[in-house]
Image (cartoon, rainbow, N blue to C red; front, side, top):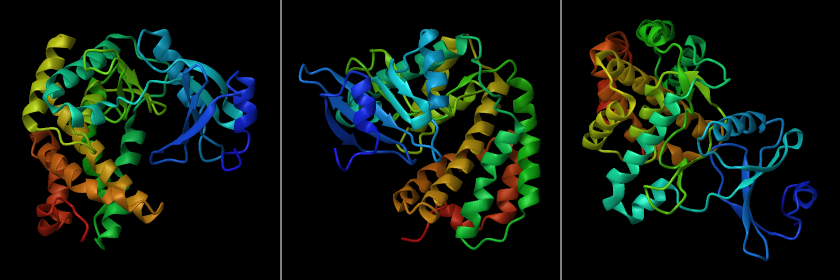
Length: 329
């Protein structure tokens, strides 16, 4: 285990997995690392290393315990040492919804039906004991566009006007999101595990440590305007109808809020993907920006986004928008 993180052997020994084989797994856009442990019996578990000071597993544990206590399907926690950044969990297997659909494209509708049903079930619960998705958070996130993306393209934009336009369009969203629901914030096809290897099986949830209490439309946007997987406009519309049926209905205001939060999330992601390249040396995320930008443009066409759309018209060059925000090859 010489190439493995310091402290791993002692933690898994204490957890009763000291004899297990340790296999590193691909990471995500963070400092977290993942390992699969396999015992001689064939039993497996997942080990997450989220080392301080860059990471803190305590929020993940907090949300996981709440989800599992309330009938949702987060991974069972087998052992934890939050101060050292170690968490041992149930192994959900390898059937991520995105990878599974690559192999079974004809099951797309069934998989998304199940993912929307899981969200509707989450939204029927009282909101969890998490911080609010308030204006300060929305504003901080959307500012990533002007902090990272615009400078990367050499654009001198109206930063104050950007903030003011977003505050104007987000104010009615905030007024309508009380009492709110638990928002997982990164609910998409790469963070949904098909536990039975099929879309009708329980939806295993991962990567939910940033959960807040906010608007029910947010995680729908995350799922249906996926930065990492193409979701057709036809499927998006069908899933919005499916959510309405599963949740007791949506209205004009809900669809306006969906577009507003779609634009907010997509502007944030464009900024984050630019930062991942510029600050963290991860250029692969730049190739995803055109998909995100195309969804952003569709959201901006909604009348609820008029102030933000006007800012884009005045500050983002038409040729850049025509290229869906792409960086030069």
